[in-house]
Image 1 (cartoon, rainbow, N blue to C red):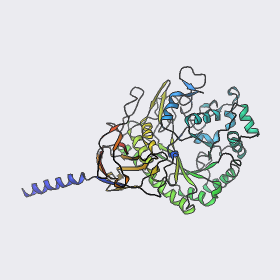
Image 2: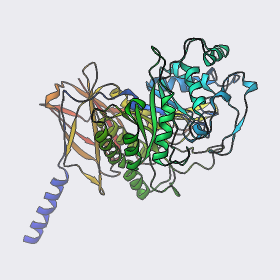
Image 3: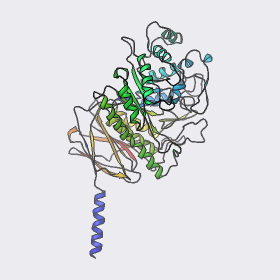
Image 4: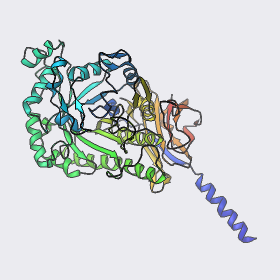
Length: 510
């Protein structure tokens, strides 16, 4: 009898322990940074069905409504996201792209073979004018990735002049001949892409010298567009690359350093995008959560050489990367988008928000039909993916003031932290708190200490589904969509809620 009583007591105490909430404090800090809206940027590369058959259907298309060849439904969807910037034309493609091939009369443009992605023929029908005009329609800053791997300094000088110069010059005159009077005033310029790999297989030391050469010829003309020169940065934990750039490149030649990281656990076998098991899910999240480590350590190096934070960190490629869906024609890097991608996007964006002092831009890879896309198309059909809804829910953080948060007693999914959080106050005074529970099976109670934030009312939205593998398809485009969340209770400066398994919640406090 005593044994049974003891056993019952132990079971009861373990249950009570399991129900202890995770404690999160969210505070106001006068010196906290603004979360740059550019953290919510996007990326479009000449790859698979991203540009052609995706974003761009051609000016002559009479079946799909379009503006200058770009699908109207995609334009409206991207406007809803308030996308702040768009990076183009690559990626690896950028270092084989010669921009002059993509301007002027279309019937006179040369074709090339896209040697990086499927060996398809690129007819250059979508070029500089199409891209920059699209950015104007979207109200997004263009980010041009320049060809260093197979290009020249003069080619880049000409591109800057073509897009930005308002006076009389050969390139500005050519732009006018091609139908564009006013310059676009392009601010963000990448000097090569992945120069440690597809951009030239360079060493960090060699690239630092090449970068200095290119950057020297890139400043804007007096009184004209301010140029942000972005150095091709490290992959994942290549801290030597970042240290070499910070040590060897004068700050007056470099406004930002890039970083690339994908949630890939095995490059030779990346796993399926939909029919994955629990082990693959764990490995994906393990890799995705390494973004916190990578960003933290790259920032530590940057702080050592640049304590005043003059040089920004741009994570200009990130996202989930799985094996392509084999049945999709010309579907290079085409993959579906599930609740797993919601977990990746939510946790990674929380990391960027929390490191807003140095992280000033990030670009989700990619926008349409490639990798962790926000939009998928099939002829005249278009759907918004679960990741689209994450970006839409998180847009409240754009240009808002970071509210520092601290987690105590976090639960663990295996050895990974289950709960991720970031918070901000927008210009109207509203507080937004984004929470993610990556645990695939267990709901987790949470207690938020918001005593210093003067919140009187709380509401929210939740994004989840029954299974991790759930996704939006062309037959069921609304299977995964945000719903109203009524489970948050505000009392005496504390918000209590329970976050369901594999769920993302954004709370709004007024």
